[in-house]
Length: 354
Image (tube, rainbow, N blue to C red):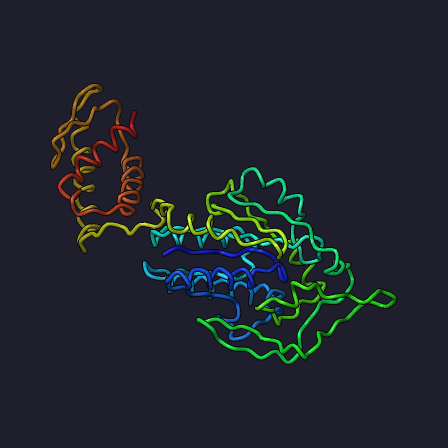
């Protein structure tokens, strides 16, 4: 079943959108599994993105969790930052190996410190993305977070596990703490954030948010691992469920290629026979060229084809060509090629000695 990858910086609405998509697909009878940072770490921890070693371990754990859940029966939603294009390509290869479709949902928050790339970038992608939506932020919802101000956090959040993922529920009677720089006006909380069902309890310091913005690699639908791409700007924009559903259940899976296909089986004696056959061909060639003149067609033992003799060949040159042929053949082992190994090596020599 399909893989849905969410991408975006903190506080851009990824968790809320993921929960909305999970609920919509589950209501249709699909088995949905959500993988997020809390499901892997046990609790949300923003400091992991400030340590390159821990972040690398987190990406490996997320990749392993997705690989375990990918099957023909479950829809897997990956709710994380996924801001590195190399990691998104690894996820694309996982979907390709599992023969399942994939789509990317890119969440952008305009006018905030955590908005990631400029909203103008999303406007530029409007023509080439599958779905790009835009709606200005409500004026009554408050002002954007200014640089240098603190980040909101919710104290005493009660965690619960739903469908294999941790969620934080904040009682209504608890007021949100806010920290602000001296002589700056108080920061108001937008109404749509107050009504959000899923509120992240992780605390992202301003310097960490700025660092994430600098190293953020925005998705581009021109890359095959970033499409189909759905770009959502602001939390008020409705989720394009119809388009996402079509991308997941009506599109074909990415075609497999060499890196995602299993190598054909080979017998345990394949390498031994390869070494023996090529050695016999070289020994026959060294013996035949002693009495040959340029232009002769040499008949070598174990072959049905001929080698055109053009010049005397040294053992060092022939050994180098033999090593190249063995290295290539080891990458494509096949028991069906055993009777033809001598002829294949002879053809390789003919082409290499032109």
